[in-house]
Image 1 (cartoon, chains in turn green, blue):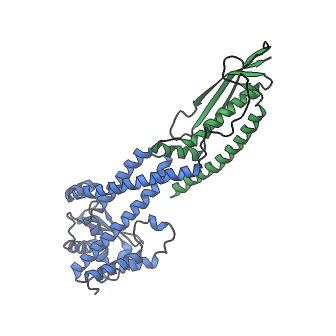
Image 2 (tube, rainbow over the protein chains, first blue to last red; image 1 turned 90 degrees about the horizontal axis):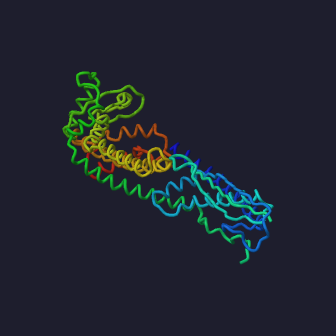
Image 3 (cartoon, rainbow over the protein chains, first blue to last red; image 1 turned 135 degrees about the horizontal axis):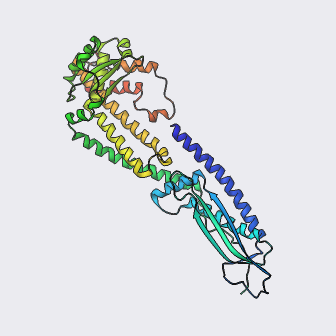
Length: 146
Length: 259
């Protein structure tokens, strides 16, 4: 029985803390996305529209590593038995991608355009058993200053 | 083409279903599948037990048995004689040995391989031979019903299922272990009741009446604190009052004399 209570305790702590952190992260992401909305960012290889000759062009990148909480990992483990959308991992990937792009934009907030945006995702835990899932998202792009 | 900045109105990349709901749906599904597997496997185990003859059972459990008839104390020899007489009423199929262990606890055990261990407090506290005979017959009932084989078969199935389904030592098996504990305890209580019924029959067959059958449980009921909340579901034995009631009802329905 002790094992079960211990597990339920971990799940509860994981859930409560995980939710609090996730909500505050989403608030921060949405606020910063609104702040940087003026910086045109595309995955196109060429700048958008008619532009003057650039004065400066540079490589910019943003990366972040985010971990999943105990509760979500547990739900994902149960999900493996039945198959289907691993919903509990969706916010992990979503947050990491948006955070990486934001960090990239924050690096070049004076730029006029960001082009050729690429995003790479890699798993840090590499599917090891009994390890909390955690991913790195790396965004890189070219910043152009007119 | 003009670049128009904008943020999406809603996030379609994440599900908006409540995670706790998903958790409960998945747990309920897993528990339901597990209970189904255990019930079906239990039926197979019961069927398989019928095909294992007493000699094979004795050889499976041979390593658990210790001691020799020649080493028995006078007290143990007396109990052995009683067991041998009761054996005429419950034929176990292989020899049963009795030993006494010093302990203040009120209990007796049927060890796999045909050994009955009686704790010494039983000999001190019982006033009649009939009370002791009932306990011994109850243990013989476990041998007769092959309860060790059934329990062993079930735990083997559980081990296989939990390893295959969730991997050894995983958190999910920690969550599922109580499911098995409750299932195993429920099954164990039914085996205890079955052994009680056989013991009652043996008592009547040996003495011609069932006086003293409930003495042991009455002693237990005195010292047994009332069970509360969930512990009842995890308990391997029915509580003493229930067993007394069941025995009285059975004695009445079978028309056994009480003295």
